[in-house]
Length: 607
Image 1 (cartoon, helix red, strand yellow):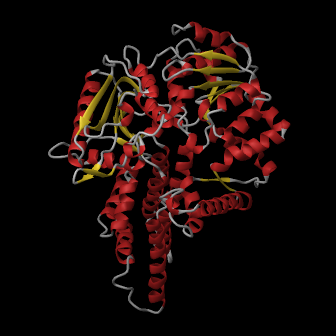
Image 2: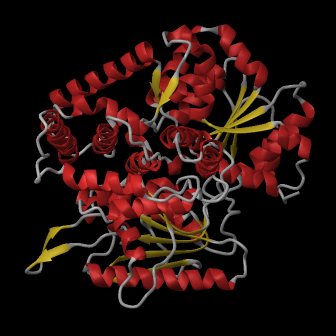
Image 3: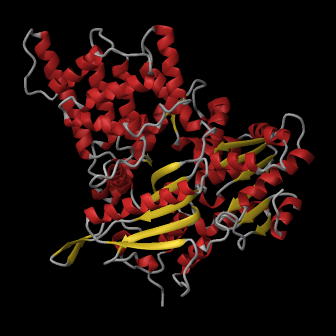
């Protein structure tokens, strides 16, 4: 049993709705697990469970890990704690009762990549998002909303954006459905409650009419305002449920023996103390790509050496960067460091639309089909890659590329129909060569080896667009041993003597992967956007930002900064909260890397 503070003990003894607030590492998760175990012992009837709701699978993994480590919780009590994401929980409700809000009884999930493909025809009719007027932006959004609803109601294809909205309508409108949910889950714990969107809050508010809610929150860690989090969300909870309130703010259990949490709190005000912060280091680098990435690689190698020396079976080092673009740049530089430094093994948490659709291209080629129209199908899968890899913000270049391939295919087929040679300068010449080369591969039945062989064909295909597909596919980790995709492809080989169903298997595996909760927390070196680190923890963290571009000594660009352009503007509350979240992900040490000639403005003390 962990040693509990007075505030944590009060959480365990209180009845009714509760609001538990505290900073990073203050023990909110630990005490909520102990609370759940106590409820399981004392208040649940047979068949009932406590639901622990969180936003991301990574946070769910952390909760599972915490449950496993809590030895005072018995095996039977652990079985009665159901840990889930909002998406998974809402999807179960929609599958059972979605017909009450206009959905067909048979539904499938429209994954983000396929949603992007479905909306590409609308998006291609507008300028780039940054160039739209307010009126055009509203018009585009209205068309997208209408198409999402059409896909859901007419075709039974439901995208994630509709989950919370429809469930909220359903639960507010049906007392019977609320009672069914609450009979199964009479107590629900809401993790990271400060970041709930308006739709999620409406759903939670409805559930709270019949289930007892326990909200865990850090009001200084609200970093998702841009997708609907509301500074007033905790007050909404107070007004709706009059909860008992418990403040764990003064505790730090994650990074004990360090000043990481203290430094994180000082970041919020910009008022720093004079003495050093134990466990927090700053490293300055020169403002040019070669020296910046060389400095980063040096810090990564030093940190890795420190963690290996600890002798732990598994360790974790996160490299957190401000932008999605920089995630890829850092990953590329770790794959091919300077000089004689060998590649640094790592994983990169990038947006998955591109990698998922690239995986579908490889899966299609693994099927080695040779029927009439097979090449047309391959081109269609390629076009889907270009239509969808940009997600909600496709580039004009990608959409144009999809159109170019489709136009080329029309001319290609016209020539074939007339018995003429296909155009020698067509973009489809190298594409056709890749299709033929993949079909001629001798596959082994080992999914990882065969997948890599097909990817190599794409990389060597003489077409830069196909090389891009291969590079995107490198970000897919579902072929690791024990993963669903690998196991299903192996079974397909045993059943059919080939990968006859590889494309369908790959698509289904990504859906299952989205809802899977049995994920191990990240280990080794991980590169990710600062926003993606929310709810996670690592042994060490390196925060690495961009640097200014100068011409004749004058700054002409300042991309990839923690604060946009590294320009000080008012209190910068949101930027300070984002920075604090990243700093406090570390258990042992945080290293902050900023350009020495233009240091991050959030590190400059406020007078």
